[in-house]
Amino acid sequence: MSKKFISLHISLFIFFCTLFLFANSGNAFTNIGDINGNETVGIEEAVYALQVAAGQEDQYASLTGSWGKGYYPRGIENNGKEDYLSLTFYPSGYYIHYEDANEGSTCDDGGGVEIGTFIYTPTAQLLTIFPVFDQNGCSGLAEYGKGGKIKIKVIDDTLIFYDGDAEEISFERVKDDNNFLVGSWGPGYFPKEFEGGEMDFTSLTFYPNGYYIHYETARKSEPCMDGGGVEYGTYSYSPITQQLTVNPIVDQNGCVGLADDGQGGQIHITVNADKLTSYDNGVEDGSFERVK
Image (cartoon, rainbow, N blue to C red; front, side):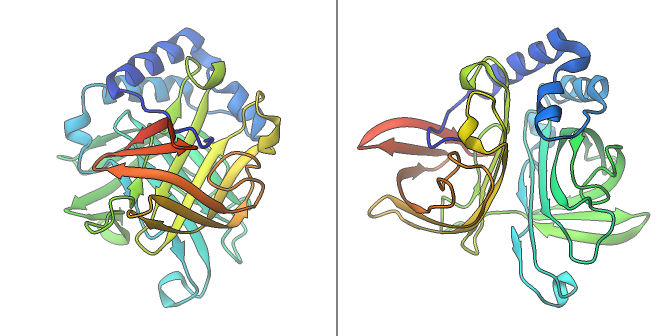
């Protein structure tokens, strides 16, 4: 994501997204997979999930949005390990998960991003995952590129994952009634019709604890992106001055994102309910809609 935030109407997004996938059939995500050094998987199933997702926004409403704290410091909760983790479900039927490498793990392939489509059936409490590519091995919703069914339950603002009938892990919804910036922004997937003719996956989440996580896939038209990747750090926002101040900790995506090549700074933005707008020298240069 560049500092130009792009607002897309969700129905138009679903139409172009599905049309593009069908038009490209089995190789729709080949470029993304090649750029990130991973084989793409499950494209036919992923397209099917998008078809199911179309028109199901109300059914998915309890699940869509972001979950978790973003940053997990060392402590009992995280088994003494430090971790950055982002998990977002989009109303279009896509999901994006990022997780750092877990210390001592031999199966997470060094951590990374996992992207795919999903079907959620709240009555059956089942989440069905169709990964498109998977960089994080045994971590995440898919394992080594293999999807499947996961038993989950959404109770108000808590997302619970089960192993059989036993609760395995839970996440709280990313929200803060006193800070409208907190939450996730953007459609997640930008098809070829946008972003200069190249597809793009982008995840951007601001957490109540003052951390942010941004992920973006590489685009050949932007060689300064350093191959794309994750950016995370801390932030502060003043609604009075409308200044977002970012302090990156890790920046793997070069010239895109909130930081430029690891350099933080201030960005002029406004947040009005469900719309995040950025400005360049006082002139609006784009916006994102809240993920909900």
